Length: 361
Ligand SMILES: Cc1cc2nc3c(=O)[nH]c(=O)nc-3n(C[C@H](O)[C@H](O)[C@H](O)COP(=O)(O)OP(=O)(O)OC[C@H]3O[C@@H](n4cnc5c(N)ncnc54)[C@H](O)[C@@H]3O)c2cc1C
Image (cartoon, rainbow, N blue to C red; front, top):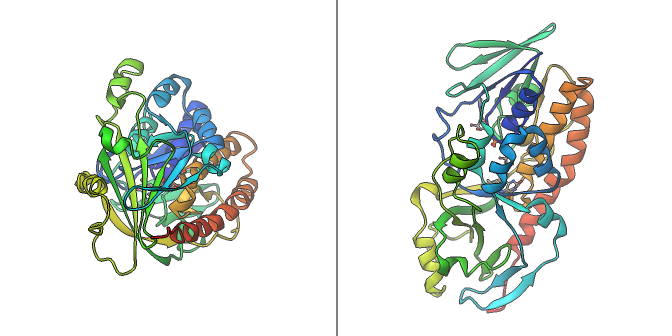
């Protein structure tokens, strides 16, 4: 069996690792020109079944490196006003806690997941043709590849999805956000003693979270898996700012605490970006063939739920087991859609909850 995976993101690479481990001919095609080509600089929280699924797919020899380059999330979250007075404590989200128990840097994880895979960079899928017992994938550079199963793991703008079930219809939430990262100096780390800190004045929310590597990734790789080359990154503080509709920059208001001004002002410009959050409604089932989807390609979620990566990894393992087992893609698709529909809906509800966070001034 030959499987072609479109997209070297978390889900596609996890699937490819699981298939390769079982000896399947699997190839990954990624449109980016290389692993360093694009901003990937934020941390994500993975846990529960998502984390287990990734470990089940990865070869055991890479588990110690995965553990060493992740960070731990613990302790209650805090709610502060812009002068840094504590106005609330939040420790009542057991699901979110367990699903975010391991903090990983997306860029470091992507490097790790690429280990030993047959990946072609600069290879953008433009379309495919399904005929008889094979699928032919076509790429922007004019090349074509035949396979038995084609997997669209190509994220929110998925070209595979567009052809299979139609494009994802993106609905603007009207919420603009900035994501940034700042080196983890002690004075900034002190702002986040627990799993996260939210600073809010009612109009604007600043979410702070640490990415504390247990060990510097490059150093850990040199010792634990010398053939794996990981980026040389240090622990950092990841912040996400939700802006009020009237704001045209992400400069903090003058009355916010000077430490917060320093934190935002010291952000690494290469790893800071602004965007509008978009919602995509859950997909409906489609007639099963030899082409299928996983992760954000089929069920993108608003980051407010913190579940998208976990779900991509769970899909990857589920699909891997299906392909290694009875090959029943219809059952895979049915289970995957049923499991993720409520999470897509709840990510929207959580965004509304975050927007409503306010404090008495
Ligand atoms: C700010 C932020 C914070 C988040 N935090 C969390 C969190 O804490 N926990 C969590 O679980 N999730 C989190 N997520 C969600 C998570 O990052 C995504 O759900 C996850 O990356 C989806 O994985 P994927 O493999 O489906 O897609 P992606 O990781 O997006 O990968 C898709 C890949 O396909 C490639 N591609 C696209 N089109 C083509 C094409 N035509 N041909 C070839 N390649 C193509 C892309 O370049 C990309 O590399 C967060 C997301 C954001 C934006």
